[in-house]
Image (tube, rainbow, N blue to C red):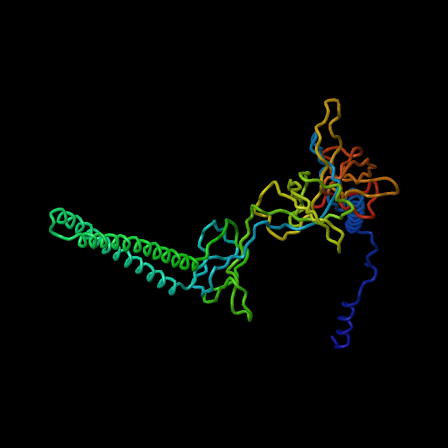
Amino acid sequence: MPPDTENQALLGQLRIDRTQRDDGSDPRRRRWIAGGVLVLIALLAAGAWFGLTGGAALPVRTVMAQPIAGGAANASVLDATGYVTARREATVSAQITGTLTEVLIEEGDHVKSGQVLGRLEDTAQRAALAQAQAQLNSARALLVQYEAQLAQSERDVKRAEDLLERKLVSQQAVEQARTQVETGAAQVQGQRRQIELAAASVRSAQVQLDYCTVRAPFTGVVIAKAAQVGEIVSPFSAGGGFTRTGIGTIVDMDSLEIEVDVNEAYINRVQPGQPVESVLNAYPDWRIPSHVIAIIPTADRSKATVKVRIGLDAKDARIVPDMGARVSFLEEHKPAARTEERPRGVLVPAAALRKEGDRDVVFVLKERRAQRRTVTLGGAIGDSRQVLAGVSPGEAVIVDAPAGLKDDAAATAARP
């Protein structure tokens, strides 16, 4: 076969047959297309249903409304802020000037009254004590000598008196013997006074030695360590910063109380012994029962306030000096009459309340919906308010509700 004829035959085999073009009549392909459309419609419907049934629900923070126990809710008549202070706080120092050889405390240590906190160099004091003790021993030895001489003089007098009766000695010899007895007795008495003086010197030297040991004046907690080994400590303030005036500061934790400044315009609402509820800024959910100790009888002219001392009825290691605190002065509790109704309503956080016109409103989360409730308010108790009507005990009240929250809006409790 010629080459041109062979090439034309090959090109004819490569030519596309347009009579076999797909016209969409394949049943299998139509089924796949229909199935994809149905899946897409199902996904769109599921997304719409999820959005309507809570997928777009607004997360909110809720608090359970607490019932008020009978007679336990006293309304706040005044709120104030202040700080925790200690009535017994001391910077401990030595009573003499000396160099520290030991410091036995660290911040946070609990110490007892009389416990050793530090020691000073005591070589000179020990030497003075030894010298005083030696003088005392010498005085006692000399007393023994004088007492022996006195005893001998008393025997000499007896012999001289016997000889005088027999006319063997003169009266003068007897008188001289008696004089020796009186002289010896005076020496013994004087030496006894010397012993007392030497004993006093020993005690004085011992006191000076004891001053080299610094002890805790009361039971408490060390809140500051002010000196190190090798530094000079003195009870007197010295210039230049080379001398420490103390080795540490101790606080009696049992003497902690709260001092607040009350505006003088409202001081008539405060009385000694009045019940108080205290809240530390560090523990806002911990309410500490307290009471008014005293009203300081003077006013601060610059701030127009009067200082009030608040006693803490509950002691706890979490309470430390200089903590910030808020206190609520409560109404005096009065026993309810038999015919008087028990306190009603619930307690809700003040942050759950919203003002709409002249009405007070809260939102309650129920069945994943925010329900708007108009409430009737009672007194304030710390950071909570008494709700007399509109909310039932145990209902989930929304706290710090978003500004855009509407009645019957989808909502869900946020995880803490």
